[in-house]
Amino acid sequence: MSQDSDPAQPIPPEEASPPPSSNQPRTRRKALIAGAAAVGVAAAAAIVVVAVQPAPQPQRYTSMPAPCALVPAATVARYVTGAVSAGQGPSTSGTTETGACTWSGLAGDEATTLTVQVSLHRSATAVTDAKTAFNAAVVPGCKCDDDMPPGSGLGDEAQATVAVQTSSSKTRSVTTSYPATASAVLETRSGNADVRVSYDITPYQVGGAVSLREAAADTPVVIAAARAVLHSLAHPAAVPAAPAAVTLRYAIPADPCRLVSMATLTRYLSQPSVAFNSGSSDKDKSSGAGCSWLGTDGTQLLLVAVISKSVSGVFAAAQGFPRFAATQDSNSKSTSGDTTTDGTQVVTGVGNQALAIFQTFTDTSNSTISPSYLAWLVVWSGNADLEFQFSYTPVPDTALSVPPRRAAQLSALVTVARNVLASLPRS
Image 1 (cartoon, one colour):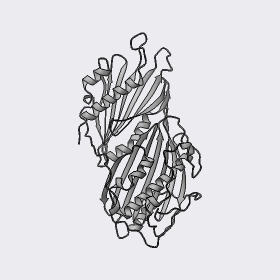
Image 2: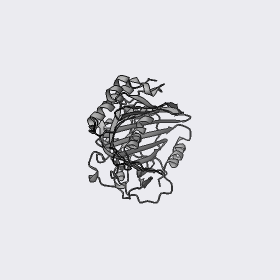
Image 3: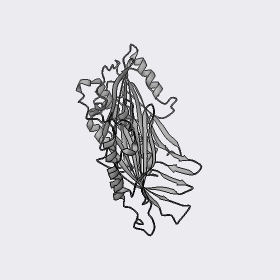
């Protein structure tokens, strides 16, 4: 699985052969390894052992720059379009210093996330501690061919894994399918440092094809990022200041139904009334809050907010956003009807990132009932992930019989979301 020897000296990222840009069309990517697509609630995976060239003397890293400065901005921009960063640390626990950064981007119908996590061990047995941590992180018992050429700048030992995660849920009455995620992960150890780099792509279109071959084609991305991290650790004085990262933190609202003004509600709902108020559920690491309003004209507005309270809350919310959005970007079949996702749209100017999702619900048990038109807006802002839904059921033979336009639904959601973000208390 690995070569247990002295680590290689990290090479500057600009001297490494640059992998192809992730912005190239997927069909043009050359896969490094082949595999089969995953089905059901599963993850199809493959493993590659990355060859390294050991150096005669162990590398000892002494300090950790700001985590979001470990990968050059140009490298991040190459692989994450419109990247927004959220950092964690560095912080020290015992004899180990840790830090992490995630860069999240939305472009077209695709969410892309690049994450680096670093541990520096500082005890008298630091190299042994790093080896122990590396062995615990990698997949044991790998029997696979080395399909990658020998690498340099990746330290002592490294293992790359690629996977396609697809998911669906099924209850007695509802079957739901969600978007798949292609993931490439590189675990590497260099001297007293352990580095994990992951690169995830989620196409926001249910049923959109993403294969293991495409995940494997992203392996050069994590290699390039890992080389950059090790080079930065070896030359901390040359690392530029970290770009501005998200730091906004919200507190738990006392009453989520008061986050939207009555003036805003009456603008979009006829004679609005509160249909449901979940209050604020306070848990150890996060808090949830929700409210639903109904109009007499067949409209409904829903708010759900999840606020991460931990020290690394912004980092947690950034990582959770793609999964939060994928939860709503789904197709489902039930005994009462079918919900179909008709399209998605990236929205700017709301929080740090936002995605709109448009759906149609058809009542298959009663053909006389008009379809319902649902619009979702999923938002990441600071340490909060929020979702808003505006639904509309046309009433036959009335002025409300015409289905709403997406632009009108989205305009309502954007206004409500900005209302909520302005009203949320800060911590």
